[in-house]
Amino acid sequence: MLTLSRNSILAIRCARLARRHLSSRASTILSALDILSSKEQPGVYDGEWKGTGEIFESICPTTGEVLARIHSAEPQELHEALDKTREAFISFRTVPAPQRGEILRQIREALAAKVFHLGALVSLEMGKIRTEGVGEVQEFVDICDYAVGLSRMMNGRVVASERPGHSILEVPNPLGVVAVLSAFNFPIAVYGWNLALSLAAGNATLWKPSPSTPLCSIAITKIISRVLERNGIPGAVAGLMTGGKDVGAAVVESQNVDLVSFTGSEAVGRVVGKRVQTRFGKVLLELGGNNASIIMPDADLSLAVPAVFFGAVGTAGQRCTSTRRLYLHRTIAPDFLSRLQKLYASVRAGDPLEDSTLLGPLHTQAAISIYSDAIKHLQDTDAEILIGGKRYDDAPLKNGNFVQPTIAIPKILDPKNQIWSTETFAPILNAAVFDDIDQAIEWNNAVPQGLSSSLWTRDLKNVGKWIGPAGSDAGIVNVNVGTSGAEIGAAFGGNKSTGWGRESGGDAWKQYVRWSACTINFSDKAPLAQGVNFPT
Image (cartoon, rainbow, N blue to C red; front, side, top):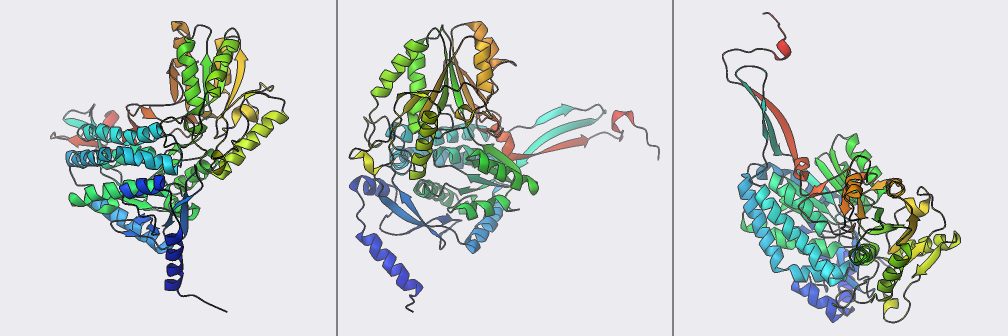
């Protein structure tokens, strides 16, 4: 039996990589970000680059070409990285918050200098069109701006005491180690939301990205690590751990991790939540979104139609906030659908790096199967397919994961039926007709998920109902704004099976600190609260 040494195996791999010819579109982007596709990339960073575990391939969803091969963490490297992250936190937590803000400012500048290259990498590896890829990186830049200011405003509170000569303080302090498990559809922004707030709060952060978008995480970590090194900060303050389910499970179960921020499916989120809470850790969940737009008879259709179009077709329907359900008032339904179909018919699918492209590919072959299964179920239940419903199979699109955006009118109207209650991560928009706003709100709220929602109206009474206690039960409740495209200034997240987590702006930072109630006695007496008398 012939056996090969480790060095021989590595030599064979290097020879194969040397023979692999990467397209110029890919090689130009990778080289601009210091990623050498001719070499296997280390996918672990804890102050130094390493990785000797399982090899993952980064595959371009547009062309099917292998962009690079990445070494994930083997178990010993994983445990070492977790230990180093804890050590980094212990030193970083005493850095004054405004100094942490200055580091964030420098990270912001470093990212902004590469915003177009990084945006192109998102298009190359994930598949979203160029303007969305650049916009995603801009979110990271923007949240750094936000966190710089926040570093001087992470305030506690002074609470009045009932006891003379006493004061009560509510004090925030750094929490510890934050693990960010991000999804493929936002391979940069979600980490940015978490890292910026976590770093401002004085924590160390360990990033476990989706195994299908490792190059985005490597490029970002290289940029941030240089900033940390220039400031004398341990690299493990912003570490990286690529890998599959085993790596993710080990991070989730580690006692070294104080907060797990997970973005992904509802099914995996349930597992993550249970495992973290079993060890009494903190968990932040950003899970499924099954988002609805409601169009009232007084809506401005010149605004509503394009917004629904972007919400349903943008990122090929692979945003958590993508519009998946469309509820139309009976009086405007024919006109709205006619206008929307015209926009759908104008969609140009193609290379997401080309400025004229509006529709990029689905991220993986598995996503095509999900799309096809959903279309088949619609057909089997006699739904009317107004447009789309097929895969693009003509050259050059047949080499990528391209599918046609679809509008369907299901015969089944029960909002608890799987057609309406299940999130399909693909560009499929299901439409139904309603007669009054109460019916539309009932349908909106009937699904398990509660991320984003949108009402189009010019009637103030409708607005009041929609945003009030009898209105939408989602975490994002928009008026005359689509379901997709949130800004960083407000907290982002959803309710119900979306997970109740909040990231980005608003009060989201309060999840990244530990809170202490501190009662201080500066008097000459020591009275008990509630008037309790305990003689001694």
